Length: 73
Image (tube, rainbow, N blue to C red; front, side, top):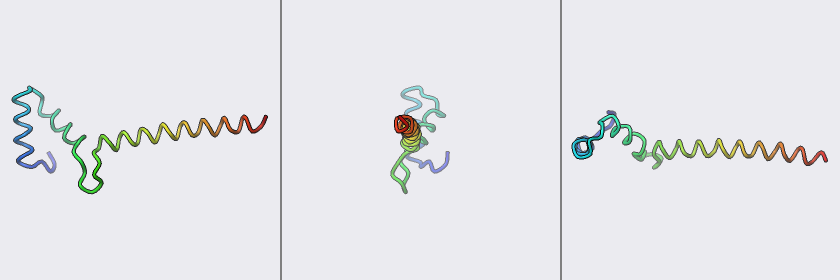
Protein backbone atom coordinates (compact mmCIF):
# COMPACT_ATOMS: atom_id res chain seq x y z
CA UNK A 1 0.00 0.00 0.00
CA UNK A 2 2.53 2.58 -1.13
CA UNK A 3 1.32 6.17 -1.06
CA UNK A 4 -2.28 5.36 -0.07
CA UNK A 5 -3.94 8.27 1.66
CA UNK A 6 -6.40 7.91 4.51
CA UNK A 7 -9.17 9.10 2.19
CA UNK A 8 -8.28 6.46 -0.40
CA UNK A 9 -8.13 3.79 2.29
CA UNK A 10 -11.60 4.73 3.54
CA UNK A 11 -12.97 4.72 -0.02
CA UNK A 12 -11.44 1.28 -0.61
CA UNK A 13 -12.97 -0.08 2.60
CA UNK A 14 -16.35 1.34 1.56
CA UNK A 15 -16.14 -0.33 -1.87
CA UNK A 16 -15.09 -3.61 -0.27
CA UNK A 17 -18.12 -3.49 2.02
CA UNK A 18 -20.67 -2.33 -0.58
CA UNK A 19 -19.59 -4.43 -3.56
CA UNK A 20 -17.85 -7.35 -1.88
CA UNK A 21 -14.69 -6.78 -3.91
CA UNK A 22 -11.45 -8.19 -2.52
CA UNK A 23 -9.12 -5.56 -1.09
CA UNK A 24 -6.25 -6.83 -3.26
CA UNK A 25 -8.38 -6.15 -6.35
CA UNK A 26 -9.13 -2.60 -5.23
CA UNK A 27 -5.46 -1.84 -4.62
CA UNK A 28 -4.45 -3.44 -7.93
CA UNK A 29 -6.99 -1.28 -9.78
CA UNK A 30 -5.75 1.78 -7.90
CA UNK A 31 -2.17 0.96 -8.88
CA UNK A 32 -3.14 0.45 -12.53
CA UNK A 33 -5.44 3.42 -13.05
CA UNK A 34 -4.18 6.13 -10.71
CA UNK A 35 -2.58 8.96 -12.69
CA UNK A 36 1.11 9.62 -12.09
CA UNK A 37 1.72 13.16 -10.85
CA UNK A 38 4.75 13.65 -13.11
CA UNK A 39 3.50 12.16 -16.38
CA UNK A 40 -0.27 12.43 -15.98
CA UNK A 41 -0.63 8.88 -17.29
CA UNK A 42 -1.65 5.71 -15.48
CA UNK A 43 0.22 2.40 -15.59
CA UNK A 44 -2.64 0.97 -17.66
CA UNK A 45 -2.23 3.75 -20.23
CA UNK A 46 1.52 3.23 -20.36
CA UNK A 47 1.08 -0.52 -20.85
CA UNK A 48 -1.46 0.14 -23.61
CA UNK A 49 0.95 2.55 -25.33
CA UNK A 50 3.81 0.04 -25.10
CA UNK A 51 1.62 -2.64 -26.68
CA UNK A 52 0.59 -0.23 -29.44
CA UNK A 53 4.22 0.69 -30.14
CA UNK A 54 5.20 -2.99 -30.34
CA UNK A 55 2.35 -3.65 -32.80
CA UNK A 56 3.29 -0.66 -34.96
CA UNK A 57 6.96 -1.68 -34.98
CA UNK A 58 5.95 -5.17 -36.09
CA UNK A 59 3.75 -3.78 -38.87
CA UNK A 60 6.57 -1.46 -39.91
CA UNK A 61 8.99 -4.40 -40.17
CA UNK A 62 6.50 -6.32 -42.33
CA UNK A 63 6.09 -3.34 -44.64
CA UNK A 64 9.87 -2.89 -44.94
CA UNK A 65 10.24 -6.56 -45.92
CA UNK A 66 7.44 -6.25 -48.46
CA UNK A 67 9.08 -3.13 -49.90
CA UNK A 68 12.38 -4.97 -50.43
CA UNK A 69 10.57 -7.84 -52.16
CA UNK A 70 8.68 -5.53 -54.51
CA UNK A 71 11.75 -3.38 -55.15
CA UNK A 72 13.62 -6.43 -56.51
CA UNK A 73 10.98 -7.09 -59.17
